[in-house]
Length: 416
Ligand code: PLP
Image (cartoon, rainbow, N blue to C red; front, side, top):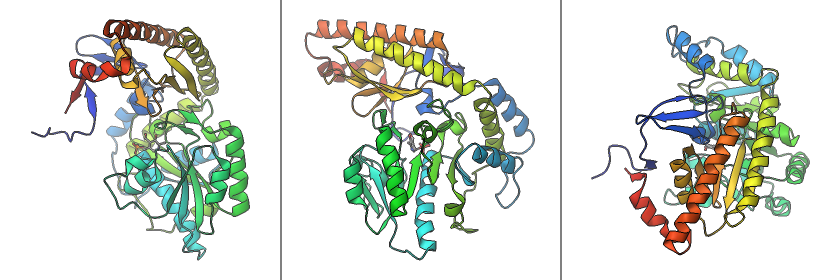
């Protein structure tokens, strides 16, 4: 019989009762270091006191208003966010996919308004993940749209980090190039600096839009407010989500004035986008991220985490192929014969949470509030997990990958 919860996720058999800062607690009293942070959403960790306070205060005043009225604090919030960005204007939504969808619509609309009706093709990169709506799934890697065809028209996929392939894909119908600067789901893969700089130059030369999906990489995760600043380029459109509300559903599409002007009243919208609670929460997140030394702290702790992971990689070269990513968007790329799902379970057994990504990478996206002690604790958990991995392979007497299925049956992962 089908579960009342549509069985889309293999959920770990853990009963969390509450979270605080970098930790999650189960009903049986265990404490987990949360280096997954809800798919990289919890920029400020669990139940940040200033966010709790803001929600409590706002929840007694006003939860929801139609966007036909002025939403308290919305103008000030948007002005502050765009003043700290490349953008001149922004649209507020609720999820990353909606922000990306808006970015796609804006790119199409921009050329439509210019009378270039065929110019709606958007180039994306192999391995990309842009969300789960039909357009976003089409824009992402091919397996995400499989079984949901027909795909949305107008997306062209090219190999990752290959500038020649990208140049060849541009035609008179190209509206823009949509990228993640660091692919998250795709395995914590950063594009090279040279690729991104050249891409900006190509977009300028061809008169097409540079559209950056910063749903995962944005809001401080690279040690700058936006990853495009880490790369030193200026986009035309940016999608934000996840960290924007630090676990509360808030997302946004940021645009230059030139692109933004193509959107006319009534051409797009959202019932809940920019609701008063989202504004209250988002404002607190911005307050914290824009505190003088906050992003310096992210840069320092991410450097320390990377150094410690590199040391771990040299201690376990038989298991670790590489440490990938940037800032606090890092990945442990495991060797082919180590199954990332199984290793993630071993980590969980050693009280640290993380999430597998493509390319046999275990991704580490801790809250931005971690300090060096949390890093030391994490490394201790990973070390124990690697030791457990060693003893499992010895016990079983063959490659770890082949025992994964039975482990899944015996331990944590429960099918709904
Ligand atoms: N874009 C990127 C880069 C993402 O990582 C994600 C989610 O993982 C999305 C878009 C979709 O965000 P959401 O799940 O909030 O719709």
